[in-house]
Length: 128
Image (cartoon, rainbow, N blue to C red; front, top):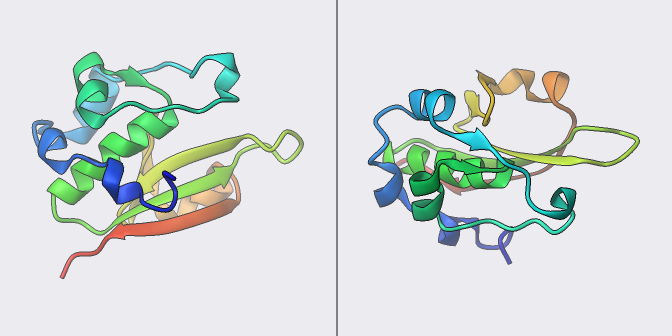
């Protein structure tokens, strides 16, 4: 259901409380993998992710996408394949120029060369 209606799971109002996504990510957010090595992926509401300041790449993507929408920026959610042998997937948010990952920010043009091939990408917000 998430992939069909990802915008439904964002919360721009809650994310607007974050002044700088980069500062919040680097000083407060802590990566925590879902139980069972992420085989069963779950995510929490953005309000809880911001409050508890931890989660996996999907959780960070929801906060980043919410923040981008609150900043009135084009917003995309992208899934990349990070390991060709094991088919591990990773999710990020970007605005068409910069990728906002839980461990770094980098140009969108570097996504496939630095992380892996894009499996799916969806624009969930477009500025006028």
